[in-house]
Amino acid sequence: MSYLTAFQDGVLAAKAGKRIIARLQFEQVLQLEPEFVPCLLWLAWTSESPAQASEYLEQARKLSPNDRVVNSYFEVVQVFGNSTWEANSYPTGNSSTASTAVEEALTSDKLGELQT
View 1 (spheres, rainbow, N blue to C red):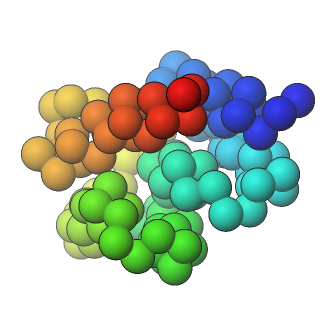
View 2 (spheres, one colour; view 1 turned 135 degrees about the horizontal axis):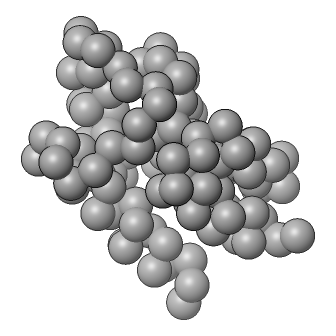
């Protein structure tokens, strides 16, 4: 299985609310392509806690320090760090403006770039 196929399977699992399966797929992707920033973002998005999400985001920031999606999502995680983290729900467009922007970027821009 290619890393892109595993990544797309992980995205589909995350959107279906199957976060554990999604994380397993994303971890497989990182074994094949350790510097794949979109995968680190999705791992952060599906993580169990803000601390875990921050770890993935720090890795992404080291690889892509000027990426607006990475930096925006890092800000979102910092906000969640001070409130309740919903580990069993996939964030949707009903979230804050920043998280909505991050989700849109993850599902369209980044995935679109991979398919070209």
